[in-house]
Length: 196
Length: 415
Image (cartoon, each protein chain N blue to C red):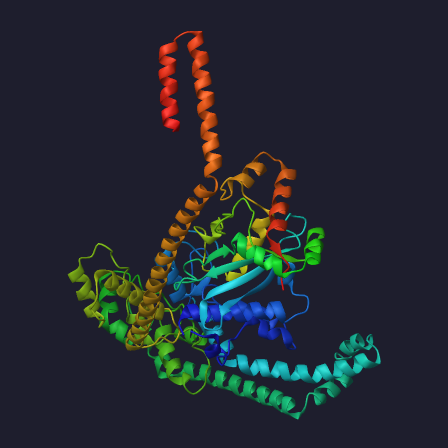
């Protein structure tokens, strides 16, 4: 076992304890619902689930993230992407839930999962995230957990000056908050399915 | 690498302590860890910005990026300083962690059952129980409740401590009368104290010539220096340290901050000059007994990693032999090779994926064209119509010929 794997194992143990060890986990409250390796056989591919922060258009909605960890981690940052599914796949997922569920979903507030990410700093088609700490300002002292939490914070603090989604960023730059929030809500309701 | 394979490996974590009698130990536990590898500090070094990491971790991190991982301040490898005392502290904690843990855990089980029984009676009684602990009478009860073994352990510990302290005293007194301490003699010229070898070797000559021995710090009296025992700032600490080090095997006293003497003679390997010619690099690798095979890039990486390992080893309280380092280097290299192979594989997959993506995009564009062909046609017709109308208007106004030409051209372009 090399140092990268040792560290990943430590992070895994730590996160699982914090998430499932206590009833009222502070991690859950801050928006991290799950963070674990995708499969038992590979330590270098993780997935995470976060919840949108309250009093933002993302509230009561869960989002999935894919995490690819380089062999030189933690010297190099992990690659983190929002999970973006194609329209057809989302329709299939939605088709599984009954019409009644969809009605409930539209009324909210219950937690459902969105498979697109409408955000000024996230590429709508690929799910790529523009966040300085995931690129230039990464430091080996960060962990997967802190990186994911930084992404949750990004949801409530978008940075329109370095956009990956120009349309949303422009709305924000024009300070048209109503349109900004409504557009995000539209996308979320369009591309959400009830998470099981 | 599978998780199942790891399930048997115990991973120590600061959160382990949350369920014990003293949850606050977790703070100490996490303070003794390196922020890069999240493990206990190995040969800790302090940076110029005051942050502490494992020597090898920060050296590797600085090879990638010359900034402190905690405060992003620009730092240099040459500014790293070893912290031997902390190495000792971490060592102690690592050695006694399991024992400390089981003791705190066992006590927890007993006090838990107490709490439960008290909670069943009245929840408020729990707090009064805590206060009771300070009273002598109830303390006796709780102490006996902990079970005989704990009490025995405590008394054992006390006897151990007293034993240790007497040993300490005897070491100190032994030092005062030890021949090594008495070997310090006074220089007849400058009245400074030093070892006889030093005096006869070079000092007396220098003194007679009137040169002050600058690297020699004056010691007021031999007794005073030996009273300090492991006085680390005195030049003589090296000798005393060696003396103590030999005794260390018997009882772990003093010498907390003393590295083996040989270690001090070793020089750090300077950082690799990237402009070094390949044959010189090979010579260098050969000098340290490393393999000289592989392309230039590999040679460089190998040399850099060995320099990191070697220099980090110099920061350790209990350094290992160079041969162990070479073993570590070859293990590191084989891991790098594995990961490179996997990366290559991943890249190949990525390539085919991206090719697929491009083809998909092409297909999508094609199907889009087919789907909206009629709408496109309609748009083109309308555009043509408006252009001809515009040019006709223009012709009516003044320069008919040129405008018509322009209109025609535009229409052609549209088509």
